[in-house]
Image 1 (cartoon, rainbow, N blue to C red):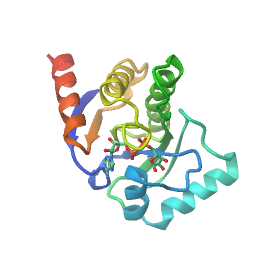
Image 2: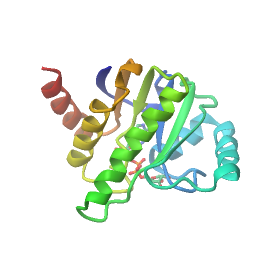
Image 3: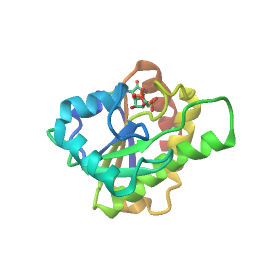
Image 4: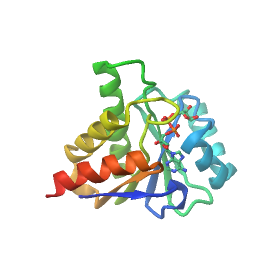
Length: 173
Ligand code: AR6
């Protein structure tokens, strides 16, 4: 499994799956969620509504998969990150669950290349450095990681990009 970082808008990424930092309603919102629904078109929302009708809301740390609509990716994996409420093992575990459950769903759907945004580090205010440590560690320690060819961490802001570059340089040395 190759781990890489780029600075980009995740809606432009042609991966098998891109991950959305959604909320439990699955009905869209601001940030990366808003961008994905806006550019992906109504097929994504329709698929999210179908998921909700089937299973109800998506709990924090869980993930669901839909079409990517008009986006260049094949699938969108929607996961719900924790809202930062201060240091807690529970918040850290829930963020790790987002990465792990997204990867599990990816493998179940034959995804080889997956792109993650920096889940919870925007509107949900998770500290960026801590979130990056959890993201990289969880992906790197994922039990079935040989089944995924490439994980792209897609950073939108300079701060996250620099954090990931440094941390990935260290582990790739
Ligand atoms: N491409 C890649 N990354 C992006 C993009 C984009 N187009 N836009 C923002 N980011 P956020 P959260 C980065 O707020 O913190 C929504 O309303 C952004 O810089 O999108 O998990 C949902 O519906 C940040 O680093 O998600 C939820 O209610 C990262 O994506 C809530 O926000 C995550 O920021 C989720 O909050």
